[in-house]
Structure formats: C-alpha cells, structure tokens
Image (cartoon, rainbow, N blue to C red; front, side, top):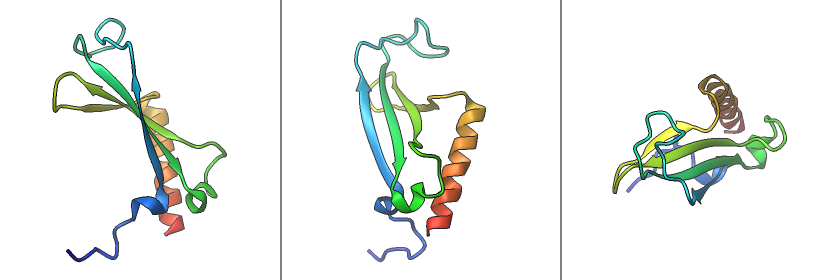
Length: 98
C-alpha cells in the first residue's frame, strides 16, 4: 500500500497514553452515562518539534466511556470551550512543525 505523502506520521506529532480508570461505575455522578459504564482516559502529549510552540506540560485529554462491548464514546476531560481552545492550539503546533 502506497503511503500518502501528506499524511502525518503519528510518531511525528506525539504520543497517546491510555489509562483505565478502575472503580468507575458510571451513571451516579456523570450526565448521560449509562450505569456500569467503563472509563479510560486518553491523553495526547506532543513530541519536541510540536511542543516547542505549546506551553510546557501541554496535554490534551479525552474520556472514553465504554457502556458495552464494542462501543466507545469520547468526551473532553475539561469543559468543551477549554477543550476546543487547547485542541486548536495543538493542531496549529502540529501544522507548524510539518
């Protein structure tokens, strides 16, 4: 398979770490979360060329809600307005590092 020369290699921009949150049962304190839902936290950290245009310690995180086998729902880990700002800053830094 031929690689698209315009695609961004994941290793170029950063790393994603996935941390499962144990003891989360969902439903009780979360809006629109089914009971017995599993939770994982996906965090993106930029590599050096990208991080040069971002504040120190920059990360972008999303919660992954897994209500049943095979389905996943991603939601920002911070308020939506803050997430959109951080995501646009991260995207701009990725484009500048290309």
